[in-house]
Length: 380
Ligand code: ADP
Image (tube, rainbow, N blue to C red; front, side, top):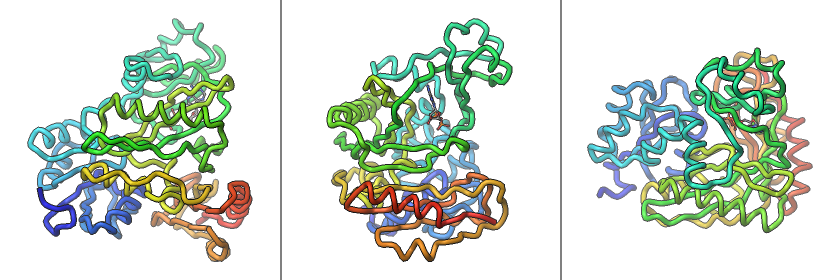
């Protein structure tokens, strides 16, 4: 095996958005050459990748040709061509997470079946093929309808409360999930390396922007009891163990009002709910992913300082060439770390960057993050 720091070693990533970009920033510390495939010529990773190739990540030929001379291939998004990855794996390229698992995660229906099969706690669900079938499930309302394929960032997810909502239902294969009246949304980033060692980061708490259905704030650590913390970590570790996955896995969960932990969904890659690990933890989620897929020892997941992560979303009703207002003021504050993803154009609620705020006190970090939110405007 060629050492990872060798000039001959090639690590490929399918997708070159902000997650790929932050991964490259960490991989550079170990001098790993990262090759990116992304359909957008000006994708966030394009400026800093060792090698950037413009091409489809969903077409067989493009993915296969990209992967065949790489030593290890990974992903930053799960909507990729799995057939090509299966062929590459068969031919000896190391693909992590394993293609068969990417295939399972691509379909929210098979995710739910996986949880059920392995006794992983999750909300009750039913599978339907089209909107017409909903009439047989009126007893299941209120529920959340989720497209089995292709949804992301809240798109392809809607609440069906009463029969009056049925007219807006998606007419496509979907999961109907019991509506969960949750207390909090939590997430655990867990990693498993090639050798099978597992480590999880402390639980974080997510706060959504109600209009955009996107994560707006993240709090690390979550304000939960030790009992819930232990339960949530045990669930996350059992998911990755049952999957036998290599890499980092984000496990998004609901904490119900009765103290139950239910898995909402999983993402087999670095995730928005782990950005704060870059400055806030001994090992970042990106470095952990790199360590896991290269078969290196997993790093410490301990928190250095409490943190709040604020997503910088494009301001509503602005689109075009992006302008960031207030960055200079924000940079003057101790413990404030802005990350600008390098997307040239903004639109309503587009994820354009994030800011991590570190402080000895989580309460203080929240106050500063709120101030930074008012300070930085992402407009055109
Ligand atoms: P996406 O893949 O688009 O992120 P999710 O399945 O995570 O979709 O759903 C998006 C958001 O919708 C969740 O973060 C949560 O706020 C809400 N949601 C999803 N499922 C349920 C549910 N069963 N009950 C209540 N709210 C839900």
